[in-house]
Image 1 (cartoon, rainbow, N blue to C red):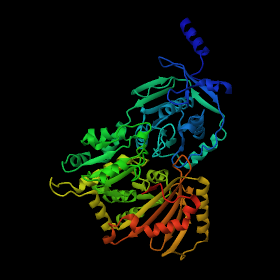
Image 2: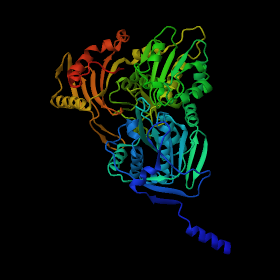
Image 3: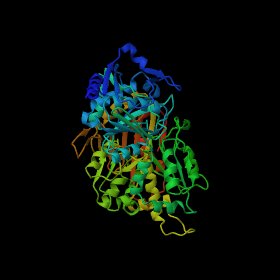
Image 4: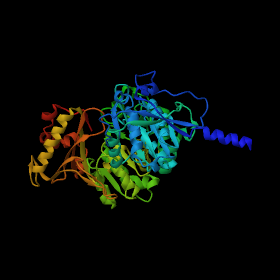
Length: 611
């Protein structure tokens, strides 16, 4: 009895499992130390050789920062902005302040990113704040690595409450470049605007950060660490995602294709996150030659490159695919692994055509769709090629604003299977993010199915053959996008306001050169599932022959404004399908530049990127 009394007395004198202490503002910096690599704050904690039964939580005073409004793909700024004292911590704490307690208290969260500069340090900050706010467990990819599609896959498989993605997507990385953070919900999809708006509101009034006083986690070693009521598990970044891919695709079909002596495949990981996935999937599981992987080591600065898989920034791959003795299929993915580019020998597949071709062939080539897709959808600026597939297959079709989150509700409601964006994003309802490697596997499946049973020496059905067959069936939607990156924001906005005024005065039947206006508007979308409304999603000029000109300001950059101009024209005549898109669209491109007065407003004589 005496020993019991002593134990009770000891327990009564012990602090509770979560102890909160308050520091003065003058002592807040004492909680930080400088990184060995860069002058940004890093959390200093007391070292511990074993897990403590007590999780001490400290209240760190802080002040708001302006400009932490979350865009369509999270919060993106230059690294040096995030390196400011408490800048990242403010946003993370504001997120927790915006979520209902049941969405994270005692729950499971996922954390990963694309391997860019600042990710490892940011991961430690996020882990400590998650613990400080009562999260029960956090799963972290080894070395902080998890592609954006993999985060969505892990959230769904592990039934997590949500997850953090540390990435600025296709934007450059390194001390002088970009960093970003976003949060995905329990379905694996990006947080809705109702939450991102609350986060922004809370960043304007935040005064304290709840941070657990725990050691930095060794993210290089798989395993579990416990700190009182909080657990950190470092997991393999590939295994859950690979397991999912094996349920979606016929790996034997792809193996048979890649093992052919008369078929060659090349994949450019652009020194980004898919470098961690390329060898385990394409080489180890599917038997591709290891030499098929280019730039396969993820680097914090992406090898001084711009990890955007398009004809401009994936120049090395493009030169190979348009050179002599080119491989049969070339592909690339971006910084965080959610975008893709597909090339044949001297032949580029536009993202708009890619999603349409995948949808048209999905039931025959991909086991996941053996019963046929439930529905198809595209972002508004994406060409109408997918619309024609939906019409012929008699499938439900949806046109949504730019931003993958708009597809999520449709998927969760069972209305949508395959979707895509002209910005090199393609995916399906296997997860709630676009998925670069999924798109590459889809194309390998289509080529494999088209060549099933063909003997070595027989002519193979090529990427170009698949596209030409598709156009002969559905017609071709000539499409191009002009990107004007890092424009002066005020001048870009002046141009958009000028166009809005022009639209307000336009009427059907107005003549624009040789084109007759059908309608012009500022695209708005009402979600058919929850009734939410998104306005000002892009300025459209749609003409009587179906041609379209669209203007948008992009929210995916970290500096200045990116003006995107989209041009589309349908051509049913198969004899004209091989015409170069820039030639076919030249009159419409000139009209688009004239209507917008883009050069007059911005001073830009040519685009940064042409797709």
